[in-house]
Length: 316
Length: 231
Image 1 (spheres, rainbow over the protein chains, first blue to last red):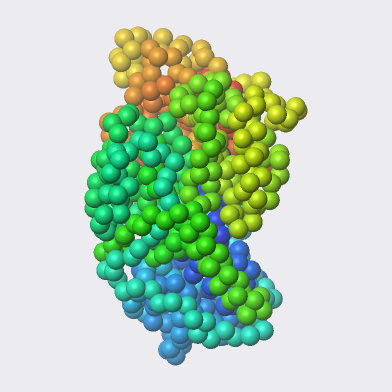
Image 2 (cartoon, chains in turn blue, purple; image 1 turned 180 degrees about the vertical axis):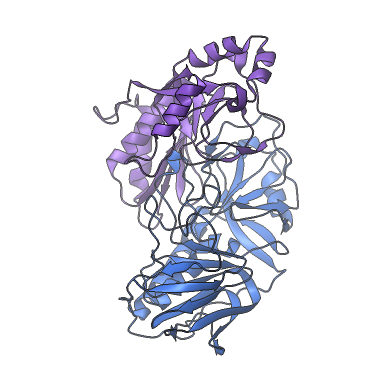
């Protein structure tokens, strides 16, 4: 079996596929990519199935040495990439060969990039998924982030795309410190909030606090008024839920969120904008904007059409 | 039992009953979750029963949302036994051995003081009821068991422990729970079980599921050591 070698691990590099779905009733978090759109773009560019496992690379990137010839591509956060010192472009498949070293340099936009390698990262599945969930130490590379010296087993590179996609017109991410808009629909527990709460949620941007992580973004900004009722009995917590503890400071739940929680949910980010939220980090600001369910669906259809067009063009 | 169907974002929908911890409501919720699973609708991503609701996660571009809400309305308005023979709730309780107190249950004394009882009396009241798995969450295999005898239903510790050993049995108000992994945790720890709540080596990694019945029983340290050696 072919492997790639982790020479340097980067700051927090984890193996992620589409997530571990189907077992939330047993307390199993879904994990998966913070930016599912960029994850899927990277896979499409190298001819992988959308469900193939990639490396999610946050903030500072790894150094990877390859053993054989195959395609690789990086999507998501903008990094300076080199292979054996030669500059490579983001969002464009490039060829590596035996002994090639891929290095990630400076990051100029976004937070999380996805390195897809043709054949996919072929670690064993745990409960049907290769995604890494750090709190429960499940999946990926033994339930943890990558470390120098790790060997990444690679699947057979059978899905080499017939056409090398160059510059597929993927929009650029905003620079660090930007204010990013995320659309939401009203949540299921509106009666637990003051009448003004949904307006207050949209009234100003929230700063992402430094104690944020893959479980969720803790936000600093307009506090949301609750109706004074006691804590809720635990309910299911969807991806993108904006939950509000007694403090009034909202939390935007992301990939590694727990499956249930007792804080009321005022709004839920639309599926089309989860990937946008997934590129945020402390220093960025998020602005919520309520939209209708129809608008949410229209946005999701547009995203899905663009992804399907890319997958079709790559011949994967 | 009143109920409502409410969307939770663009790819999940909730069937909610009255907000209280109630065995009858939870029995319906668990039965409904199993029934939805058996219906085999296209592109359902997950079904999560909680104390009093069922969350259904779906792919909005592929799932027939109308068929899903019609099914939820049927389940809500009927008694919950919409299809006979589906998801019969297991009656036999899973017996969980627990070595109480000492290093295994560092908060047993605090619970005894809270209750104004001896530690032996606390153990008796913790092992007496037949508990129900109301729901699972927090970690793989973590069960929220109820309903704890009100005399010993002490609330969570004000500050969680940095590390609770796997197998620890805890109390948090009316709930009891068993930690499946070493993790931080804030429940009052009264003992430890040698059984693994979650073990990937087993064919079904999860010892328990929502709706199961649980009975705790006391073992001594020697039996605990023997059980650990066997596992």
